[in-house]
Length: 247
Ligand SMILES: Nc1ncnc2c1ncn2[C@@H]1O[C@H](COP(=O)(O)OP(=O)(O)OP(=O)(O)O)[C@@H](O)[C@H]1O
Image (cartoon, rainbow, N blue to C red; front, top):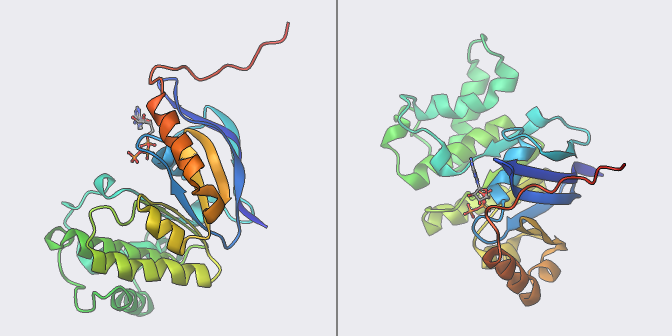
């Protein structure tokens, strides 16, 4: 069964394609890394899945779930940490689906938030302002929020960039436990060794698909060389291709 199906999708910024004719599917319960050179369209693909950028063409099908059932962690740079929130409030926001907009936070949700913080190694941090946390601690908070969200599909954009190795190790265990629980997990990653060791499936992207499937086959030397060569040959000014108009 498919959790997400990409049906010939193209995404463009000011008509320049960042993701070009991508088709394929993320199987339900799969653990997939998205890898590729800088500017390959990895973040853009995640944003398209989340509905944050429009599709120039093609379609995304969400299987048995809806877009709002996806837990999403954007790149760290996209998150405002100056907002005056406590760690507990930030985590509790993950439960918005069960809380609704106006309902009070129940003791149950507050307890879940404490448990989630404990699971990511931040017990006792509940009342700390998020602005006072280190990058690694803040990433742990965002994972605790995802734990509360309890989403069947989790999408992570470079979750370990600029994060210390201890935190990376701990949060990788959280990702692996999501996989063991049968959730569908998709993560953009730059560390190829990490991808090879822990991610059974990989989508190697260079605007187009270089390979998608079993990690050992996709991350071959040939494919990585091809991805690099495509990145070097990119024409930043290329227009989105237009379908031929029949007479
Ligand atoms: N908001 C935007 N407006 C215009 N162009 C954009 C925008 N966002 C991304 N791009 C361009 O689209 C292309 C793909 O960017 P994207 O961030 O998706 O790549 P990426 O694979 O995630 O790269 P990285 O590994 O460097 O994060 C790049 O050429 C980038 O400059």
